[in-house]
Length: 90
Image (cartoon, rainbow, N blue to C red):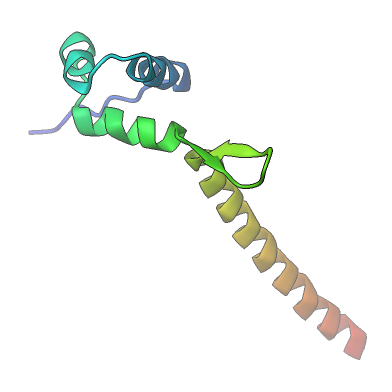
């Protein structure tokens, strides 16, 4: 028996988050759209703003994407340093 995995668009997720933030409960959204409460709660937590500076706010999802990008750039930087050392010896 296979489970059907449903993929939701970002626009749909944002709409559900906006409905939740406007006062609809998780139970109401669950009944109306057939989405589990834990799924909705995950979307809400990813869309929750995080203050990183005095005038700068990002969502949790944006913050996590920045962390991943920073790790990738640091890895690329290390590779370039090693390549530079190899070419400097020649």
